[in-house]
Image 1 (cartoon, one colour):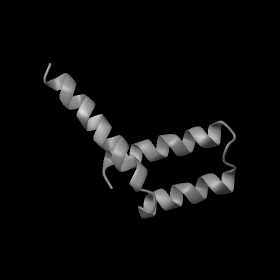
Image 2 (cartoon, rainbow, N blue to C red):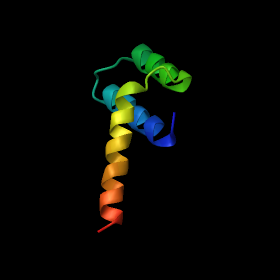
Image 3 (cartoon, rainbow, N blue to C red):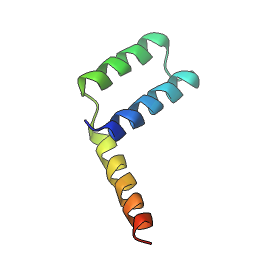
Length: 60
């Protein structure tokens, strides 16, 4: 998993915890799954979008 994917997942997990959508145990479980690389599929799409946006602005 790339650094971008990891950062997106960590930010999403923290936001979920901060907003009360995840309790402490759920948050820690999610962090563990992120570390193990279990949660990847959706962030691939996000990473591709980020790269596309960067390329668009880099070429303008």
